[in-house]
Length: 85
Image 1 (cartoon, rainbow, N blue to C red):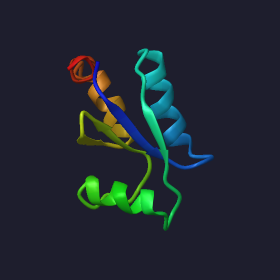
Image 2: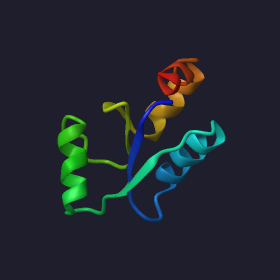
Image 3: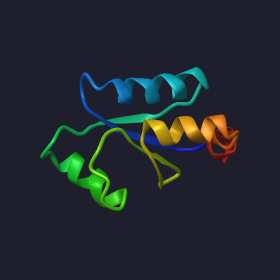
């Protein structure tokens, strides 16, 4: 099973949507609280190549983007293969 990390903030509907999709697929993930200005947010921005929005999702260390990107991968039939690696 892939290692999944997701940088989130409280009360973020996109974060909730991404976590719900991962949970629906039975994927264990590490959730990292990353409020604006925090070191965690700075880490997420650095790891994602400058993306400053949340959520930022990483599968096996690779930045895949946010909630919309995760959903697009799923709709394209590519997410399951990434999660199985």
